[in-house]
Each structure stands twice: as C-alpha cells, then as structure tokens.
Amino acid sequence: MPHIPVSGGFSAAPWIWAQHLPGPGFPGTGFPGTGFPGTGFPGTGFPDASFPGTSFPASGSTTSFMPVVVIAGIVLLAVFGYIGYALEKKRREEMSALAEELGLTFDPNADSSHDDRYAQFDIFRRGHSRVAKNTLTGTIELFDRTCRLVTGDFRYKVTSGSGKNRSTRTYNFSYLIVHPPWDTPPLLIRPEGVWDKIKGAVGFDDIDFESDEFSRKFYVQSSDRKFAYDMLHPRMMEFLLEHPTATIDIENGALCLSNGLERWTPDRFKSAIVFVHQFCERWPRHLVKEFES
Image (cartoon, rainbow, N blue to C red; front, side, top):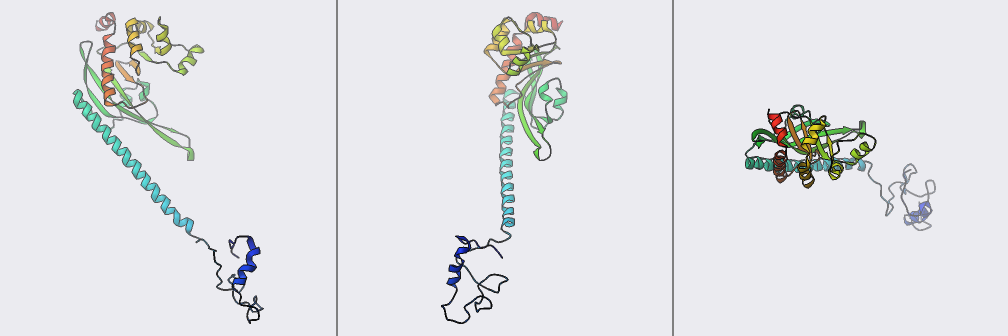
C-alpha cells in the first residue's frame, strides 16, 4: 500500500472517507462485501478515489534532474575556460607591447626546455609540467659589456593526494635572467624567512655580516665566503636594504632575479631591469678586474 501523506496520520482517515460516502440508508455504501464501492486503495477493490491535498511524486523525478546538473556544470566550465583564455590573451598582448617598448624579441609559445637550460636555479625545478612562456629575449649593457637577457613567465604544476583525493594546482611566476660576461662563484641573496631563523637556531646558519640589520633581514649563502663578503660590502648592503626585492641567485654563469611566487606587471619587469643595472654597478672594481683577467 503506498504511503499517503495526510496531516495527522491515519486518525484522519474516517473524515476523508466520509467525504466520499453517500448519506446513510442508500444501498452500496459500505466496504467490499458490505456495499462500499471503490475508494482508491490498490488491492482492496476501492478504485478511483481521489483525496484533495495529496500528491505522489513521479518515480523518475530524481533522474530527470540529473541532466540539468550536467548542463550547469558544462556551462560553468565554459565560462571559466573563456575567462582564463581572455586573461591569457590580455597577458600576451601586454608582454608583446613590453617587448616592443624595450627592443626585445617576444615569443608567446610554451618552452618546455627552459627548466633544463636553467636547471641550476631551484625555482625552475619545482613540480611537473614546467614551461616558460611569454618570453622576452635580447641584450643588456652590464660591466661595459653586452650581456644576454631572458625574462618572462614560468608555469609549473604540483599534484598531491591519490584516488578521489588527488588534486593538481598550477603556479605562475615571472623571472629575469642575465648572463654576466664571466663565471663567478655561486651566491644566493634573499629575504630571510621564519624557516631560515629556525634552521639558524639549530646550527644551520647562513653567512652573517657586520651589519646586524642586514643579517637579520637577508639570508646569504655561498660556497665561497670570501666572494660573498667582497660582494656584500657596506654600499651594497645599504642598497639592498633600501631596495628589498626578490631572490638574487648567481650560479653557473647566470644571474636570476625572481621570488618564484607571482607574475609581474609590465612596470615590475622594467623595475627589475633597472635593479639589475644598479646591482651590477655596485660590484667591487677589484672583483671585476679579477674576473676580466
């Protein structure tokens, strides 16, 4: 017997049945076997009764709702896809205009060999699906020499979890690389973080300098401490304190400037180029002469 949602439960049934009964004394006014013709309960012989205010949901209503959910999901994916496409198109246009302004060559295509070409820099070895894109290439004048310049955007992905909990996040950031005219010992200069302070407390310390303020604010690492001390003389430390910027990483004949966290605006790219000029101008002369010889 199907459930009939009647307020008050089955105690209200006699009232409902009373609405369908003719007055007393008429023939055929009882239950089956007593003269009550059909009152609508299947299997009881009560055909075709209707109760005001009652309804029975269609058995396929849940199934018929599923296509709506699927269509809504497809529409949302299409909307987000279009927004992503529009943002990337705008980015390519901005980077193309920047390249033209700076007299550089622009390549919007994905370069999957960039991470191998600059494998000495940790920021290009993160995750998987690594590609450089919106790449600007050309030259820059440093140390009275013409040096190669490469700058642009970099993307990588990180996948975590497994099965239904598997998820992938995409990260994008900008960078600037210049190639000095000679090789130097490696040198890493970046803002000091909480983890650096924890490592320092347990003995994994970086290179400290006479300036306590500089030592507190910057993490410095090099396999050649003399080179680090020569590079970070008082004028250089003062310059870096006044112009805190992204990580400066010098390795294998290249200098990379990036924080590995965000994409730069066109103005930020131009500021990065100015910063590299000013940073290289402050290299001590005796070091430059030593490298040139």
